[in-house]
Amino acid sequence: MTTTLEQLRAGQLAGTRRLKLACGLSEFPREIFDLADTLEILDLSGNALSALPDDLPRLSKLRVIFASDNPFTELPEVLGQCSQLSMVGFKANRIREVSGKSLPPLLRWLILTDNEIEALPPEIGACTQLQKLMLAGNRLRTLPEELAACSRLELLRLAANQLSGLPAWLLRLPRLSWLAYAGNPFSEALETAALTDTPIADIRWNDLKLEAQLGEGASGVIYRAALVARHDDASRPVAVKLFKGAVTSDGLPDCEMAACIRTGDHPNLIPVVGKVKDHPAGAHGLVMELIDPQFTNLAGPPSLESCTRDVYGTGTRFGLASALRIAYGVASAACHLHRQGVMHGDLYAHNILHGGQGRALLGDFGAASFYATDDRDRGVALQRLEVRAYGCLLEELIDRSDSLDVAADANIAAKLVALKEKCLSEDIGSRPLFDEIASVLRQLTGASDRDAAAWAAI
Image (cartoon, rainbow, N blue to C red; front, side, top):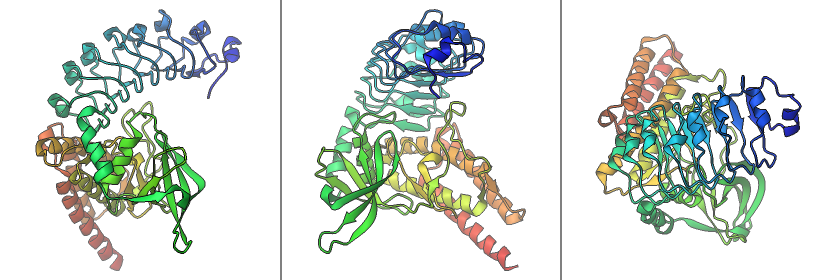
């Protein structure tokens, strides 16, 4: 909750652990230091700040700092002196320079999306705790080789930069699971081809009647709509996503649209009906099948504490058969994507819609990236990277699955755990590909269904 400067100055916030101030600040309020004994999370986003005080380390318990939407031109070096700081977010500033001195020793999560950064310092290799690095929408031409030392790195966003390729060492990082690189020069041709060469219907804006807003994300707004067929004025319900056009933490909306179009039909993907044509403001949009409202997100996105792992509702449990069907459906969808040369890039439970009884739809292609299907070595490397993300999902499903106390279920559960361990292996070459994963799960799902039927008959 945003607090006011007056509350801070009046001493009404004594003992607080979390402080958010968005009130046009041009200078760091010295009164914040009155909270030094307790303050852990400081959010100064949406102000007019361009510097932080030299004595910021007096906030000895500070773990998280956000300063997005400010006019900083460099990442403040004083951050590197904050001994407990693990999350730093300076999105949508004007940052050009990132000094090695600005990187705190316990850094786990660094957000520098939508700035003007041309290079990262080699000292980033000393950030041995780094798990998430978000750099979309900058001017990076290369990555420092020292980043290869960040063996804990799991999520990396490189979309919408000036990279001429991905370094070989990047795909050998043992825990890298979520990667986005669309919108760089080396992938532009594939993205253009997906938009221009993939058959898809054009749907005129005047044939759509927007109704209620269903949701809004970083890349666009989704509406319920009616699609009118001109020949008989009949209509059918659809969903329309209108893209905002600005860079997001994952990448560019145009690249997301290209991925949605390229993927084609699959029972575990949301069907795309067509793309919007002749929008009066020139907005890009997709028309999709309207999903049954019974479908809800399988989980929530990661929290500040969980960093890279999704947050599930309290008491979330799955029957073993349901967990197997979710796992198989997502693996089958991922297999289909990679056959099209598309890496999802954000394979997470919070991007999966679940309709009960194991019905699952994989969505949100904001972090999707393309690769040439005839480049087998690159395709296999990217697929094994994404398999680790899938392994995280499988682990979460297993941890929340109820298994019957019967030998057959115990045997299936053991095989599921063994598959999960292979997917999570830091020996990247030993990870299975998605077609093998789907094959194993298809067999386990069939066995589970047969056993459930047998027990029901007793």
